[in-house]
Image (cartoon, rainbow, N blue to C red; front, side, top):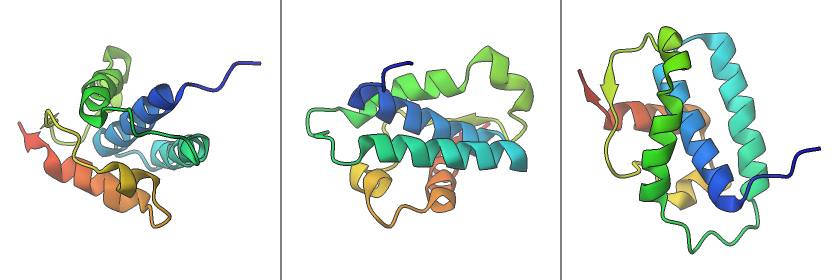
Amino acid sequence: MTDAPSPAGALRALLATLVKAALIPDETRRAEFRREAADLRRQLAGQDLSALKPDGLWGLAVRDAEAPELRPEETQTSLTMPQACPVALDTLLGPDFDFEAVVKRVRDSAATG
């Protein structure tokens, strides 16, 4: 059995999942990303995240999401993700989290190429 990721690891994975959902339009994959995001949000529930730096984790998450093995699936418009995390922690972890709205915010925050 694998250990659950640290809060920083889970937040990084959540951010990477949102970036992948913004880049990969396939509906089957999108459903997988939605489930993955829900699982990661459950792992983060109740955690003290006050010491985490979302902007730093964002940069790592973007790199994770833009991995070479995923490029063939990334058929959305070429996007350049912003340097700063476009989604606040309270939006990511709040009770009113809306996967589609957050993915749209990620996509809209990117500069198109």
